[in-house]
Image (cartoon, rainbow, N blue to C red):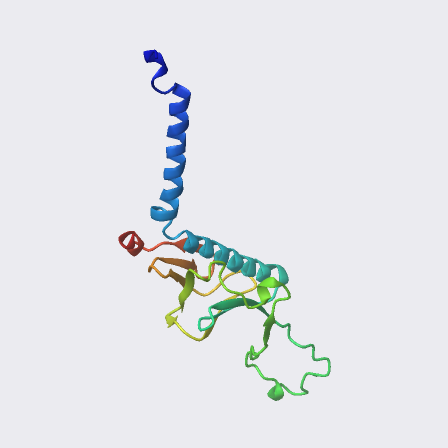
Amino acid sequence: MRSSDVGFTLLELLIVILLIVLITGVFTTTIGGGFGVHMRNSARSLAAELEYVSQRAVTTGRTQRVVVDLDRQVYRAEMQLPPPKDTAAALPDHAEGLSLAPPLDAREFVPVDARIGEWHALDDADDVAIHEVRLGDEVRREGAIAIGFSIDGGTDPAEIWLRDDAGYQVRIRLVAFTGEIRIEEPEENAVAQ
């Protein structure tokens, strides 16, 4: 046996190194680097649906809202019905009979005629939950709460907090008046990892 027959060729070494890199990459993303992946995916999906509802309000000229049921962990989009046309109403003969009070906005909301109008859960509902919704100064962790979008796409300040079983959190923040939607990860997540 010659000494040149013992050992590995350069090609064999490169294949082994490539396999080690691939296996390490797979384990790194599934074990260590995978913290919050489901959370980020759910946050992106929910943020996209919120953006869609905001744009729907602009294009339809009707107020829209997203109702979140924290007890059942589901949400859906609803739109406000247009005001009924009252053709029988006539102006009063005298100014004393004319009400100057703003009209009551008691119109009802109905589910949007699309998949987003049906109750549905987050994409990764087994791993991720809607922990709380903050609407202005109000914080809700149970019951139902609605986040409204006006016909210019603006909204009141709101935050939707998602949390997984490991305590990893993501905040979806709706910026007041502009309707801008941001996904933010609190600094506490770095400590949890």
